[in-house]
Image (tube, rainbow over all chains, first blue to last red; front, side, top):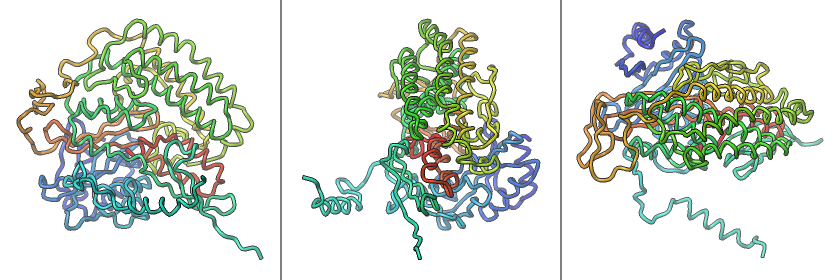
Length: 178
Length: 392
């Protein structure tokens, strides 16, 4: 199926959920509301003529000040059997920064969703292991947000766990081999 | 009565068999792994954030540092994505040169893979043979662009400079002589009893699970799924080249090893066809953005709807709606994807890297739970991860 035909099918099945369909080149994105995202995804995964068995990628995007809903979660889907693909996007507002997890449908979403939480602070309801994945566990802030500085605004100040590390080193000095 | 107690041990981050700085926390019941928790992120350098704050040509050298064993493939993946986004048509000669480079990189990567994987599970000689042969490919890199590891040879719109006859002759010699070396590796381990005991029936993942977990590349094809981006969505010269996609059937470590070995032979085939068919002409598209660093004057790219590609003195014009594009290429480890959101300025609004190693590392608990500690090493080897790419 062509991407536009798939988008039309989603639109006819979930008319109230689909907000916008955009095309660029031969790729089609469907922007949906986040409320029934799990149903849309199960529909895409389980309908035989669509059969999106492979979640290529899942990531977040921060549209601070550019769109009404600040975040979007982007799912790149592909069907290996039918060799077609589609992009689904779910808008996530800043004041209700959570969305249903799709780990039950695609196990591969596990780390992608952890990364999305790590980088944007979007929490995934029903995720089996909601921890940070790339940044240290006690990190403050979400680095890929547009308001997160590229360079530290702390000046000479250190990451606060650093002091603890230095203290541990100091404490363990008595065990050093001389 | 003997009390049984689970023991937690820490494998890594500084462990020679974890291929970088991967830390696994293993909960053991005797020798059996009950729970395996991978911890990644020790090499996180914020490549995506850096990419969002650089212009398209400036972000190219960052991609070398993702998977440093196959840097050329990463460059090509990035360039293909940006070309699709900006609508740049690459000259035919550049496409063929890139295809040769991508396949040389695939061979170099698989050699390093077989060398380290074999070393991990007890075959030292293959390591020495592998490293010796990799030098050969690095010499070919050096001949064409002067660099050996982080090459940045492909450019948005083509490649940096043309190849000469000396390179072509060396390449012909390489594809003539190299198949003997593949046989050498196979003589050493293919029917080696220890190798078979360490690999056959280990790390099994069914085709359905492999797809569901998002595995790609030889790790997926070892489970019998013939998914290859070069066939599914061809880029560069792959649609004009005849090659096969080797698949395994037993879904274990041994079949993934066989897949990679067969891929080496297919790569040789692809390189031979590319050399024979090599067309003449330009190697860099005329509308390609200039790759020297922007200094002073604004540079305008003719033919592109948004005009300026490199930042000038005036503020770039922002446009709505956003252009979005996901572009995938088949790097030696699997599917490397770039997702761009472009708002018409010289910098990507969002640059997302879909790294195969990240996805493959996430499947380690699935492969390892219930197996022996020694097999965890075989599993780390078989998924072929590089932590630079995993942590980005």
